[in-house]
Image (tube, rainbow, N blue to C red):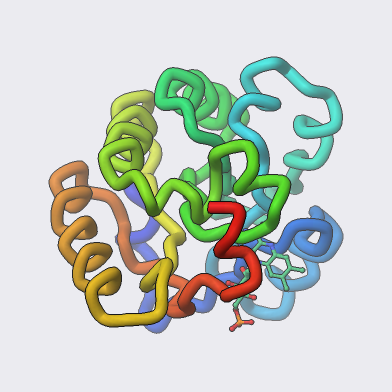
Length: 185
Ligand SMILES: Cc1cc2nc3c(=O)[nH]c(=O)nc-3n(C[C@H](O)[C@H](O)[C@H](O)COP(=O)(O)O)c2cc1C
């Protein structure tokens, strides 16, 4: 399968994933107004694997939206492996892994930005996603989880490591983790 990212003219105009916002109607509008690539709202990898009906319904897309990338969150490599296989069957053009969400309910369950405290687990999740299918995998992560240069360096080094899996690492939320949620990490 051709990696669709390599076929897009630059600069690439992408619709960012937004939970509760980027449903199919919104995405179709953005596509009609010029978005080159569309992201779904994030979906729980566990919910996908357990065939949660709400999650499946949330991920329904119109063919005109393609290329559509499905963003997933979670923290279990074996679940990511199965979830990515399902996404390939559903016809998505790519998979994006959320390493940046600071929402309490995601962080509490071990996903989102919390994963950036455990870069080895991040590598395992990336590896599982890459090995599950031929879909291109991209990552959305934070430039730092703390204010200060050291964490930035660590994250920069980590992107070199996941490069080995030929991921697209061009989607970075260049924000530090906000102070107020530090306590739940
Ligand atoms: C309502 C809302 C929901 C969001 N949901 C997600 C999400 O599901 N996954 C994600 O990676 N980012 C999510 N984001 C972050 C956005 O994708 C984006 O990175 C952020 O708004 C910063 O982009 P901006 O500087 O253009 O606002 C959300 C943002 C907003 C405002």
